[in-house]
Length: 215
Image 1: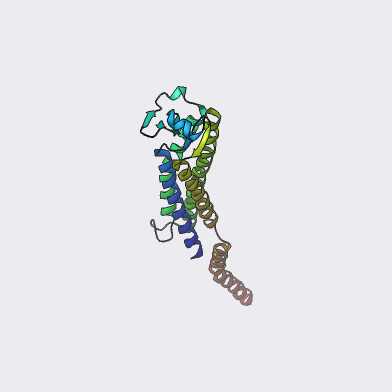
Image 2: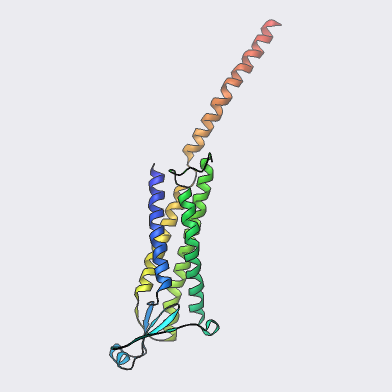
């Protein structure tokens, strides 16, 4: 029962984290960059909100976004962050499906408990991979943007990515740790094995005793 509660908690955290990473991937408010101070940049229309897919110019009367369509000319940190965040968004679906199918309330035929444990561990590992993709992207992107232009502040998308990454990391750890075979299951299996073997040994011993008495 305790493992089921831990697994459900990890799954809930992972789903929320996955949604946070999807929001961060789809939006473009990752960082706000500027070479000068805030007031000067607002007057010169040089305050930019950078994201994975577009750069947006922010001023007092203008909000204009330019889509980043020339992939080969983009900096390495943008290309890598794009690939990792898209990978994390795609991997979330099979990871959540695997963990859902390994819940104790869902039975797929007469499969053994070990098959559910293996499926849950695989789902937890995928969620951890999602978390590592989010860590690399949300750390490398602001560093690269700061080196390219002056970094003024972090945006909503980056905060969403950080929260989603933390939730996926914690959820994946909970799912992976609670899905391992417990020593109690091995004890029960051994008890069942010896209980099945016990009558056979007794009947064999009694048969040998009867034969020796007959001789």
